[in-house]
Length: 142
Image 1 (tube, rainbow, N blue to C red):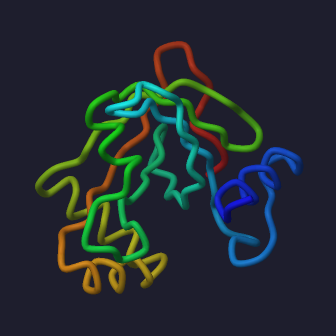
Image 2: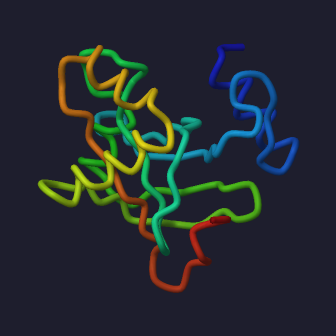
């Protein structure tokens, strides 16, 4: 079983709580629709609460390439979010300009690792807002 599959299994078995390097961190599961395959793909991601939405950063661990989930949300912005307490549909919105820069600065202020990933990657890391679809629950704990 690969690393992400283990984290996903533990997350679902423990109501959104995991141990190891993610213990006490904010983690959600993002299920996207494959841009080419059309199949669902689930990825564990750190997030930052932002009002009624949550923000995720397409860091790929500092890789020079965007992660697959980012390509998927650009092609198919309707996603499923599992926050532990809730599972809900959301629309993924790629932030741009000053809104992206401000959100990234807040993320890097709370966890300097984001800035390190951006420097290492040699690219501007996309910030994606996950906005609950109409009628969905609030986007999780603050």
